[in-house]
Image 1 (cartoon, rainbow, N blue to C red):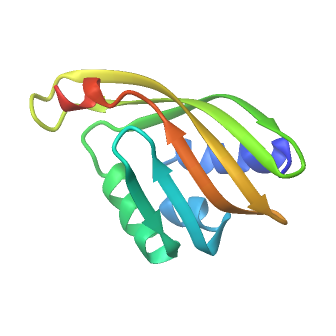
Image 2 (image 1 turned 30 degrees about the vertical axis):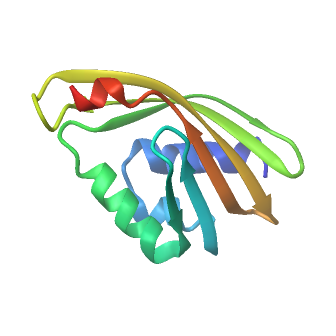
Length: 119
């Protein structure tokens, strides 16, 4: 996975474009959220996950940095929006670690503290 491909994925994330994000995952990709233990499997579940995430109040993503090696890659990002409980603005810094096959993501694990989004 190249830094260029990660930049394309990052741009899709920043534009909140579910279908552009999904183009870069394999059909049986696994997406894990370390903070909650949530595991999403396959493009149908990924589509539902990103559609729900991108519809949250005021949601935005900003990609801060990317790094890649032949088999793995990493992306540092900021997720911001409004808490669904209190409508309080939040800003969360996190990271994604990717495994790949060819130019497609087979596995993504995200690491962040969700507490500010739950206030």
